[in-house]
Amino acid sequence: MGQFGVMIGQLVGFLIMLMVGYGCVRLRFYGKVALDGMCSLLLNVLIPVLVFSNAVDGTNRAQLFANRGVMLLTAIMYGLLILAFAIVARLLRLHGSRSHIFQASLIFGNAGFIGIPLVMALFAHEGAIYVALMSLVDQALLWTYGVWLCEPVSDHEHLAPHRTNPFASLRDDLLNLAKRFVNPAFIGVMIALALILLGIRVPELILKPLHTIGGMATPMSLIYLGGLFALTRWWGVLKRYELYVGLVTKMIAFPLGFYALLTALAAVCPWLPVTHDMILMMTVIAGLPTMTTIAMFTGRKNNMPDYAVGFVLVSTLFSLVSLTIVSAVVF
Image (cartoon, rainbow, N blue to C red):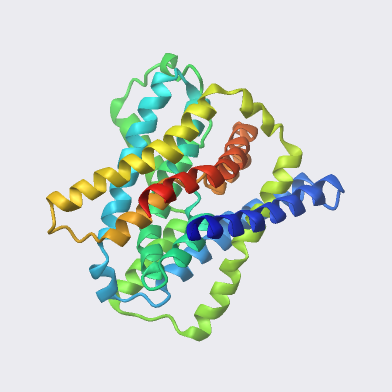
């Protein structure tokens, strides 16, 4: 029950922060304008600094290559999640922004604010390097594919007229894809990777304040979400049938199936750079609740933010049960 205790401690702290944010908005200490400022600060400064400082802290080239299996497993996990929930969304007959945000909410787990504390607590020796390598893949996909999924899309986009110039269409698509890579978090990941590969160590004098700044991301994001709960009609998601199908699939069925697949793969291919601890860590990551950044992405575009916030809140509460079930099976 050690993992259960760790999760309870994290969720109690998160609940308190959510309540503070909710109370501040209800008491009118601040409102929508302040929340928009928090969102901008989180997306452009705090989260990128958090990712960068965690990635470069104590990580060298030898550790990077010795534990490269984490990056492989993270890529496999996201590939399967993207495929699985594209199929689930189609089977549930979801369309437009509702389909995209449903997929984003279940593909991207809260690795930053729940996953990192859990991994560090469960794997004291290798936790830091696991987090750094996982973040490289996780953040690269979140800030590209995740951003794209959270952009507004018409429910009838398939009825839109086709462009007469296919080369212009391809050019525009490539430019839009390139623009998604130009964001603070992805740039931070790439700089961190370059520094590690070049063997350049960030001095502790610089790293310490970066950790302090990045450490603000978790409480501020939860205070922001608490305020967003007060301003959005998030409870409408409880009437959506896809919520229940998605949560059970993502947070119980998928991690257990993923664990069985990785265990079998490691047995059949012993030459893979994968350890049992890596498999356990990725199983926990696979079952995490919705990433809070998804709600921020939809909020800044005013693209069904109540739907995304509802997924964040309900999945976080559900994780108390789902992570207990998963932990009881795999640990």
